[in-house]
Image 1 (cartoon, one colour):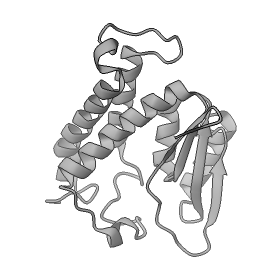
Image 2 (cartoon, rainbow, N blue to C red; image 1 turned 180 degrees about the vertical axis):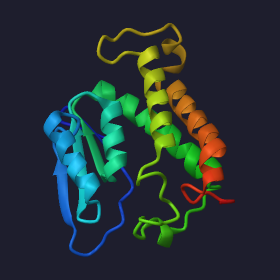
Image 3 (spheres, helix red, strand yellow; image 1 turned 45 degrees about the vertical axis):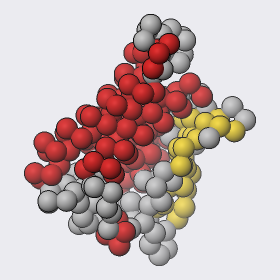
Image 4 (cartoon, rainbow, N blue to C red; image 1 turned 180 degrees about the horizontal axis):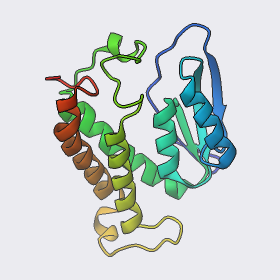
Length: 190
């Protein structure tokens, strides 16, 4: 969604607990925002992050949003938003459709994740971050939203489709290789 020059994407709602403070982190990828994120990551049971914002660094914003479980990520640069959305779509499609077989245990998903079925490593999914970075990199390689430079293939497939496909394939492959064997993420067969 795009509003007044800002681009936003809604992420799945985090689990709720009693006596938790709702916060939004403006400039989450800057120095003060990074310090705030670090504080929240040290006490995840005390905070629920409603929104994170950044100017143009979509990859860093996506990492922050996933790390803190933000419900909304807002990027001021609409060009970067497209790259963020395409890479997030690829990891989400691979995870839900192919790795989980379109099945989620909602009770376990929204339960505290200290030892929960959907917990990965330290409360975030490193495989998802690698896949997101790969998809974002492909997007910017095909079409750079800052300079507007593009490869010739952009005319036929845009940058979103290859970005989504690469992020999905990386997420699927690494999850099959590492996450299912280590019992991360509540995948079937763990």
